[in-house]
Image (cartoon, rainbow, N blue to C red; front, side, top):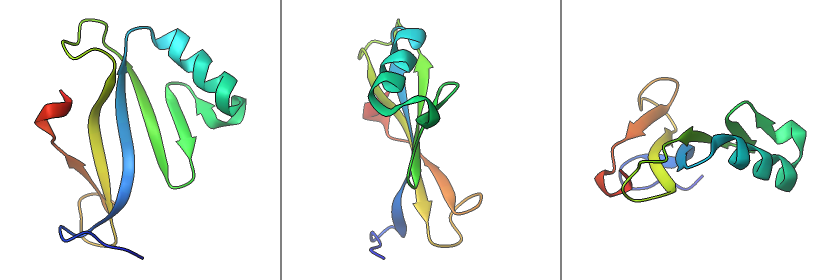
Length: 88
């Protein structure tokens, strides 16, 4: 398993701001199938995308939060929120 210098072993979750939540959920269901989309979450092997409606976001649609996965000791159950100001 590869590990970053900060101890991270991968990405656990990416939160993506979208202008129209229902349209985005439908688009992911169309691309990936019903089983991959649960509510506002899109499940992949080892990580997930969480969709959040935010039509007024100054940067437009795109990633707005990231949680990193750690082998041990990093946050709750090996997952820790990463604050990345340029994503806001």
